Length: 262
Image (cartoon, rainbow, N blue to C red; front, side):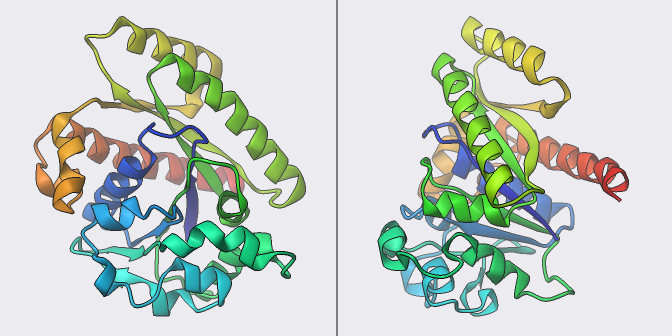
């Protein structure tokens, strides 16, 4: 089981959109995927069409009450894709846990509770756009961080802050944590700035930047309002096709990386 935190401390860069559609694309190519909605706003849960009435348990119960993931995860309309739904009460986790034992490892402990024969091939964690106890839990549980990066100037500033956060977590909580890759999102070929940002990021981070670029696409933006991933809403649109390519590239990267880690 491979655990990837989808994170960026800047909001509006496409984290949730990437989590939903990458998870859907991975499931479409035969992977068993669990999407963990770690954002109290619950956008990933809504975007996958899981209404609140169907969320008998949530990630809040897992982190605070230490309920097993198997009791809280729900199946989505996408075969092979399960969801660990969010809850607005997650916003108070930092206060509720206080100085509780292993407060930074609650999510890691829950994932380890799945056992030696994991039910999932990939766990994708949709992180909130801030550095708090929830994000720390995600990075403590993750093998690596996948960073969606909007092709705009201010996104570059947020990236340097995120890199410092990854270094801090690696040094104090999770030595195995690394940067899995950077995905350029909301690319607008009509805007020269998008091209400049892409060039700068590729020059600085090299092979860590995915070849696949996610374009700015109306159909991808519309899909959440219908409670569907873009790949279900309109599989032929450019955004959906880009996420299918991204999933294939991710799996290829993982296959070539595993022998190196062995």
